[in-house]
Image (tube, rainbow, N blue to C red; front, side, top):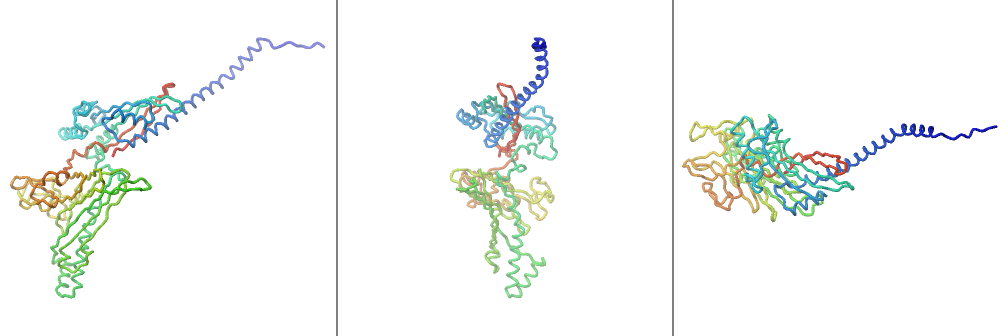
Length: 479
């Protein structure tokens, strides 16, 4: 029997190869696409992880308008970058996002060849222009940029870190609820972080209870004296036919202390106590010592960084009359300066009346706010004397900024002090290097400080080999 031993022909092999190629090509293509996607995903994951580490470092750093070569070298090391360059500038923007006119784009401070002495000066310029025009308000935008290169997991990246306050400036300009056009991007009274700022708001909450406590101590003394006249006086005081013309003093005592060896890393402590004394009732009535001397601790908090202290309080009101405020600030730190912002408010915004000057009888004093509970007004004078004053007692390394008028014109046309350090008459301007040198006015525009803004942060990483771009967005509060 003859066998057919014919082999595979070349044509058959070619056909098989073509068929195999047709079949395998989509598979190989999918594998290649998958590998590229996987590589891109790995690249972007590595870039994202690295961007997150940069973001955390940026959030902890304090921004400056100038860095030395040594500082940039250290920052490059902190960012795990091979090199680092830096630039910053300022400009103003209108509500529609277009460029403003007050601060030209690319503006610098004087130290960098610009025309503004400080960031505060820029905000003051914009605020002044906004008040003058009232039609097209502007807000200041701060922008910073860091650029350099980095090697991450054998990948080379071009790194760009852009930081600016633009979104928050535009939000402030377009919000009808913000009286202060820059309130959103400022660490002022409307946007404080309680974890990094000592915010003391309970300093007036105990005035009324203390008044009641002093009154009840007198009533108890009269009713328990065994004297019929005392008992009658107690009845008259309770039903309001007689009044007790006593007076009390209030001290707001603030201390900034150092904390050592705290396991959680806290380094500073801020304590605020309220101290009320009524020497009148302790002298003329048989009341216990603790009934004429009352203390409350209204703030006791630990901080990891030295906080600015914000004391917001109402003028001490006792028996429907204002009293002198005594504010004591003790800084127990050896070398660091404590900044304290003393902001005097009114009790509510709904019980404020217009005020007529008692001297002229007609002229309104729009800045002298008056609660309904009293017929006095803030900073009232009787002749050349203020009806009350604010006494500051401060230790070394304390700076105080306050909205309390430090000096006022007297009826004779001379300037007289509205504060005292206890050793100087209320009618004498406090001399240099005493209280007035560390107690400074908190002007409206001075809230625009070097710090206290929220920055939008965009970190862009470009793989120098593949060209793949990874972008990471976050934000930073600078308090």
